[in-house]
Length: 305
Ligand SMILES: NC(=O)c1ccc[n+]([C@@H]2O[C@H](COP(=O)([O-])OP(=O)(O)OC[C@H]3O[C@@H](n4cnc5c(N)ncnc54)[C@H](OP(=O)(O)O)[C@@H]3O)[C@@H](O)[C@H]2O)c1
Image 1: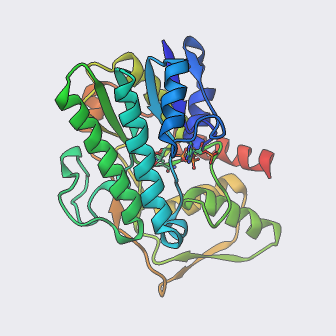
Image 2 (image 1 turned 90 degrees about the vertical axis):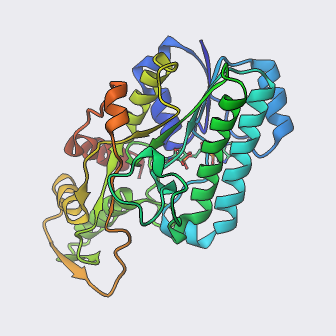
Image 3 (image 1 turned 60 degrees about the vertical axis):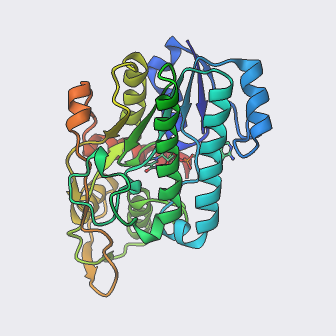
């Protein structure tokens, strides 16, 4: 089977390419210079020449809260256009299998936890990443519509929780929580800081999965695509408090100072935990412990700084 991976230079794309099962496939992993998803004629000609059997759509404009707040137009427009372009071009090219990667950020902000797949569009979105979430909702629905119009097109969506791992972004302007805390605690250790601040009381809970495990899910999904649900959450089904993440990262990094809670700062959502019932019935589960995932991520950080 010939697989096209979009976003192959990103964290998810790189983890897919590094997975041992990648060698069982003929993998097309074009860089953006060869396949720009904002240019539909580029996509059409690429698909006509390369004729993949299946597309794994792992490209996107991705970032933490700061980046989403700073550039809401790009987060909405680029993600929306990439999704619509690649899905419609794939449909026109007659490609029958498409795995779309969405995000648990598309669930309504006040939805009750754990977040099940039927909560999509059941409430207002989180304002700090609304544009990104709208684009994710649109591509998820477009997959459903394409399949509804012609059942032979298996266009399905995986909805991962937050991810971390090798090939993550550590620059504070673009990073998510785990890489940001890794770089913060490394700096604190280097400069012998006696304490580090945590925004809020640290009791908000978050679910982070190792990106290597998402790659594992992708290959499981490829092999079991017919029976994969139309939309499926992918995560641990369990979460940790922000304080737990700081403590675990401090252990791995070797930071021995104290933590001070800055209660004047916002805490964000109290919890964002996916419902993993469908994932369990589908027969896949995440296998990397937080400690092991953090150790590999910190190794990657040390090697690349
Ligand atoms: N990271 C997470 O915590 C997380 C959680 C849930 C879901 N996801 C989803 O997983 C997917 C991948 O995320 P990631 O963390 O791997 O992001 P990432 O590291 O920022 O990678 C994004 C990838 O998309 C590519 N890309 C951006 N614009 C493009 C364009 N116009 N044409 C072609 N390629 C383009 C980038 O190419 P360049 O290298 O050229 O920029 C890069 O390869 C996204 O859909 C994201 O929403 C991520």
